[in-house]
Length: 132
Image (tube, rainbow, N blue to C red; front, top):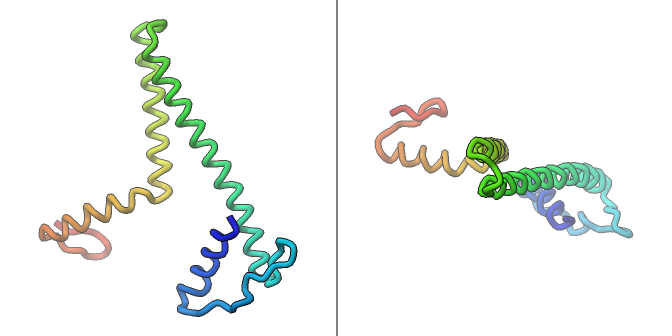
């Protein structure tokens, strides 16, 4: 996790501004950054990373639950109506996970590809919208 933080820090504060980071930027003493700004940014990074890790666990639990619902629906122990309810619940979870992916920005590439294709087919880009 430390190298991810350091890469993010350099990209955010140096690379984007076309600056070269000082050689001693990430010097440490017993796992503590000596540079005060780096030290504080790392504390924030760790706090946010713990939130991300917790959310990933929740997403994984949703995925596992959806898979369990689908498996249960295959069972002959349930009526057709009950099986449909289980499948509907699994579908609802999948929709929630799709929204989560869209919020993360994973849909960006799909939308960009569609926009590029529309532009190559004669559409024009005006005011951040594609006019067909």
